Length: 177
Image 1 (cartoon, one colour):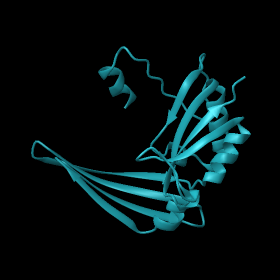
Image 2: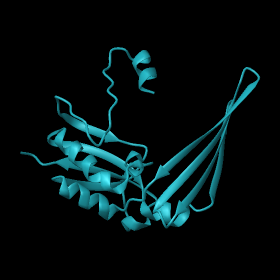
Image 3: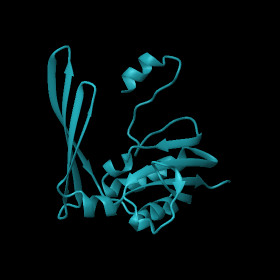
């Protein structure tokens, strides 16, 4: 995707690196981490992620993350299946949760049709459950504060118990020094 982005937007600077251990010679006012990326991190690596984010934010800078909640992965994934189709493509998503390993698995079976030919492939995604209280603890340990949790598809403040949400977004602030 980065290679494609560089071709499409040659005037922008795209950098690809591990978000648990990166060194840049600059700080940012805003850092975005979307599409449940944090769920792909093993729980023991999440602290490093938050530390790196804080280290690369300007004082008072903002970070936005979103994630699949523990409630979603542990209670609703087992045996869940959905199918989406568009012009020339179809994807069947199947979700499972392994309680012993505390690990969610999403299997995406794709069929892409182009010029009379069909191509089939499968993606397998391993995701780890994450609770809002864990996000709060990780942020606090990295010297960041939570501004608020939001519902990430409509970008509105949550209005119920955090544990009732299947996905959440979180706005974090670096300490103003």
